[in-house]
Image 1 (tube, rainbow, N blue to C red):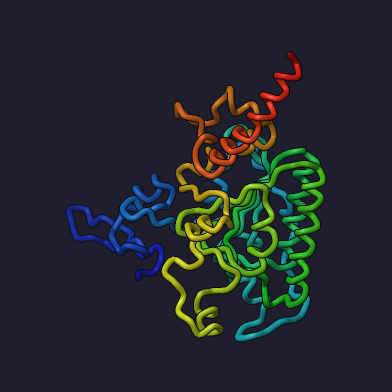
Image 2 (cartoon, rainbow, N blue to C red; image 1 turned 120 degrees about the horizontal axis):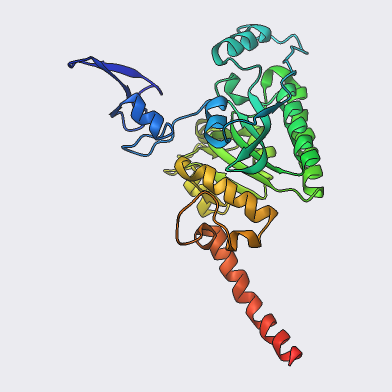
Length: 319
């Protein structure tokens, strides 16, 4: 396997620069990758995205209003391993251009209002520390105040070890905030990107009304190496991948990146309007409504089937 994003210069008339897919190892032109939303057009491998790239792909142009931009990470424990924690934070900020591993804000997704939050794995493995937890809570509070759907894209290694028990506390804090969202009867849509693991998977990522995963995303509380060392058993092929999670009902749907924006917008309409999806399509020219296919479509068909006897009984009562 090659490192993600490895570039090569191919000898030719203009020395064309191409990038090697880390999955199939074949070469792809950068402009082709950009046009395919960083998905390999040859094997379908979904490359990691930065938080800003993800926001640019999902949010409509203009109108982005960041939440929690004043938050800055500290070093409450004075933690030091091979390097001081403060130095790790500075290095992550310099390499990513972000203050922290989570970016959230108000936006529209295909004209549907939403509060969008995105993890960035490049920033200390997308780990959740005190600032990430506080930023999530502020975003949830903004969703409640504006009466909009919460959409969150996760890519994380879990809780941040350099903040000890303070990072573990964020799991409880964010869960309580999401309970306030639920009590306000507002939807929560979660998108699990590769990888989503640890405390983030066990808390905020899997508490949504609808859980979407990108193809091939690794979703597990612990990594396969740790599990194999603990159990002393070889894990089956495809363990922890999105497709296996879908087969066990742990996620609701696996959606390619090219369809993700349209699917999220349609879900917002469905969860906040319901019947509107029967008369208006959202961002699609398909003749067959999307909600008639997949897991959600089968659920709707089953609900209609169960409702038929009740409708017949009501009609007899009216006559």
